[in-house]
Image (cartoon, rainbow, N blue to C red; front, side, top):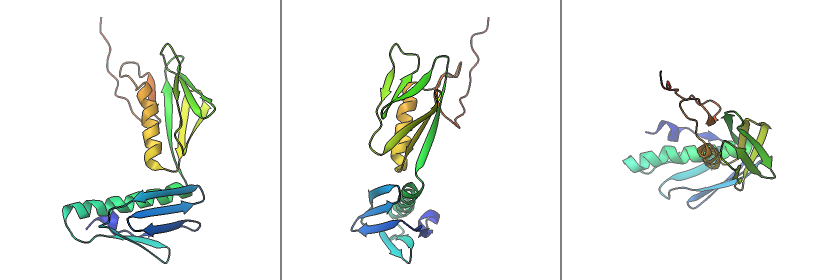
Length: 177
């Protein structure tokens, strides 16, 4: 049986979960999220605790069991606390700045690169070499951070580029004379 899928999910105060047919909607202090779930999974809310059940022990049902519970748990966490990813920019003259809701990156190209914030995502630039991506949807936060990193990924020789704050870049030795 799925260890994650079996765990009951306590619903905090101020959060409401609505289960309608094959979709789950979660509403909380930071916003509202909804997710389509497999019609095979049974999602029920009793006394402030959400449980997910599966019909059989077949492989696809076992996989969907843990996935469904994790997706709902991420929605509950998102509408209560939110998610954030921090990116670090390294390199001489490399920097970021906000222009309205868009992020402008100067990372060694002949022109600055504009990254637009999708709905539900906001950028914060506490320092010119640090970018924080915030939002309530975990997948969208990670995807937006990956799009920013893809503008100039860290290179292995000098380590210049955009990386996640906790990312370790394996360095290579350069040419030897």
